[in-house]
Image (cartoon, rainbow, N blue to C red; front, side):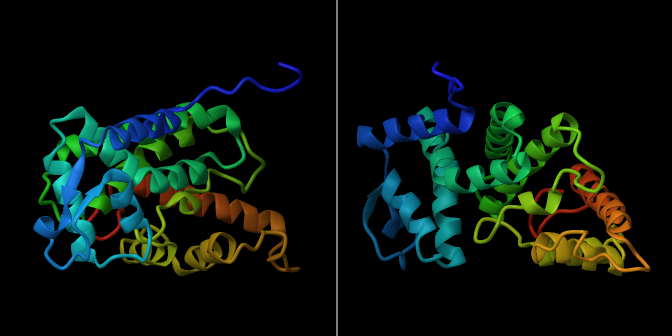
Length: 246
């Protein structure tokens, strides 16, 4: 291998291949005007649908209509591949956030993310409110459960970066709403929320927060405790974005 690691495709890579095959077949088209009259498009293939949703942040009614239609058609394996492929940019962000810098868990983590998404796609009704958010939150929670158990033993204060893996908008909640929900639910206190925002929201390290009264090592321990509390609340179903699975 000339000193290079042999690359093996992960579940997300294979999902991308399946999506390309479905898109190239020309069999999977949506007439979006019939789905949602104010969508400025006619019959579109899967790639065009994905580009529409990833482009200029379409209104919520557009997104809901497209995902409702994709969910209704999941009896055909090609449409299932299409649904996963449309969500693939978001699923890759979720997996990357949870894997961090550890390539050793990436293959299995990608598989867990896809598994969580597909399980929710089968379980949730097409008319469920905020269907896209619910699907991606399920993928995130399944991946998080794996990362929490199989992630590497990191230095103190660098636990699984729960908040870093939260699906970003427009697919899911942002960090601020999640922290606000954690405060309302009694999962975190104000000081823990401020610490998580400083580290995960602003990119500051515990060392930067160090003072004579509270050294960086203490901030790292507090960060670890806060992230574990947040992670456990997500995994137990106590905490979810508005409209997401609980």
